[in-house]
Amino acid sequence: MQIATPVLALFRVCIYAFLLAPIVVVVLASFNAGNFLTFPPQGLSLRWFWTFLQNDVFLDAIAYSAILAAASTAVSLVIGTMAALYFVRHAGREAETVRVGVLLPLILPEILTAIALLFFFYEIGIGTEHKIALFTGHVLMTLPFVFLNVTTSLQGRDDSVELAARTLGASRYTAFRRITLPLIAPGLATGAVFAFIISFDTFGVSFILKGTGSAPLPIQLYDYLRFNFTPEAAAVSTVSILLTLVLVTAADLLFGRKA
Image 1: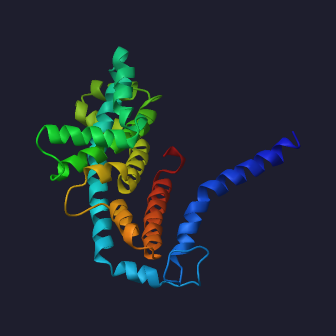
Image 2 (image 1 turned 90 degrees about the horizontal axis):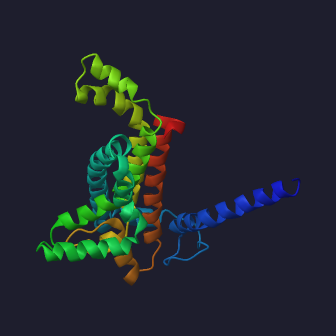
Image 3 (image 1 turned 180 degrees about the vertical axis):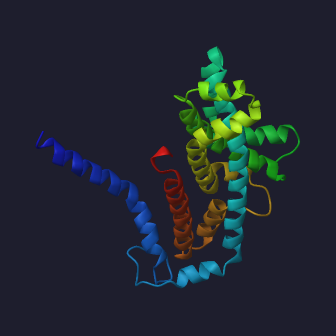
């Protein structure tokens, strides 16, 4: 046991280092004073952050990604919550079928989901010129995260509290709004954070279903790195990492361990 504890501690350190090393490299590279994306940095400078803030293409891409992620998260919250309520309370023998159906976009490779949607929208005559294809893809990718978190919040809850409210004269909507909704709020918050981050950063669905015009941030970064190799790309990635940290920290501060 005395030997196992240090070995396990070293193993944990190695795992964390392996996971965090790419993030650390990207963040440090964003402060590179040189003209090319290299590591270690050739001096430290904020010049590429300033360049990024003056680049309307990246700023528009961030705004587009944020709007798309917010809209996808909102729809996923509604559908995912309804699916979770049905799964926990009413599915019965169909529970496993419902669960697998909702989680299928998470189980299958993302590129297969994107290609299937591409064929579907071209088959019905819409194609990718309308934003509905890209939006649908993002909803499908974010829906499982809302479903899983809300399901976890619902399981183990005492349904008799809501039943008592109904017995005392509360409508179904009032009982849900004043009793069920506060109970599952941590799951909703966690699901929303995960959904927003996944939508903001997803590449495969965006790459396959993107039409002409505005593009999400991951696609703009991909197009940029095809022809440019400056630390500006690292600066954009660092801002994206900071956005993720802010969302996760906010969820932790608001809901703590419940989330």
